[in-house]
Length: 417
Image (cartoon, rainbow, N blue to C red; front, side, top):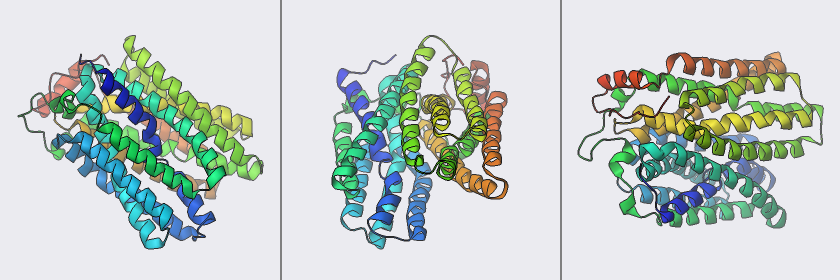
């Protein structure tokens, strides 16, 4: 097992603490800023946010391919951070339509680089044997950063207004770029970072990677999970707004805070469970099964307190997914030279599932009501769990069979399922 130096471990902790504010800190407040401060029309706001999502989706596969190929992973992460800083500053200083649309495209494309770059750096530092524990620590610091960032943003907005949030995001992004440069380049094994056995072995083609049935079914499970998950909290917020006007904003803030707090604990416990010998597939399946339960409870209860308590289940499910989604993708792609591309494919499946969730969830609610909407989302989540349980085999035997069809696949995938 590779051992991280104190300097690299501290840099990874700090990067993950700030990553949420760099990657996701702008999006939730863009609509509020453009509508409240700049008086944009809803259609224009929706188009700007859609452009961000489209840019991310288009950039994910090229970003994964690039991170697998390059030895400049730290520079890629730092460059994406500086691009985000530039985009955030543009929005803060010149919130006219063409500037905002350009900045949103830059922000979306840059955001696609961050997850595979961080995954590649982490794998190259920790190695396959240390990946699970290190990713659990990464996720714990990431969610702790979400909590701290939410509190900081609330104070900042109340004192200086929403425009200050974009300046703060710019500062976080610049700091992240500087911290990425602190990781010693000599400590990153780039062959390990991309999942190859040796530096002189070429990675397999994308088409060959997608012939791995375990990876394909895992990606479908990810898509279904996010199809069931993404719209649940927004729909619960709509129910609160209709049934308990006046308490909806406070309850939603509490939901986000509680979920992030539970995610910190869940990420930590995932690392402990893996170290204790519990199987990756067992833990991940348990996390998937939490989501359909959450949807059924949302269909039955709608008081502010009930919604907050139910949202703790999101902290469990999302916390498990955040840790083990990375680990499973790395295991399935180990030996192919395409580990970071696999991480990008997971992010793409997540984004497609989330977009479809909000669209289909809204249509079902509009036609059949909120109860049926929550049940439909629960059905998608249950399908994700059943598909993963039945079709994704993480046993050493199954993975060795897969390796016959992926000639560069290593004997890896040693960790217990």
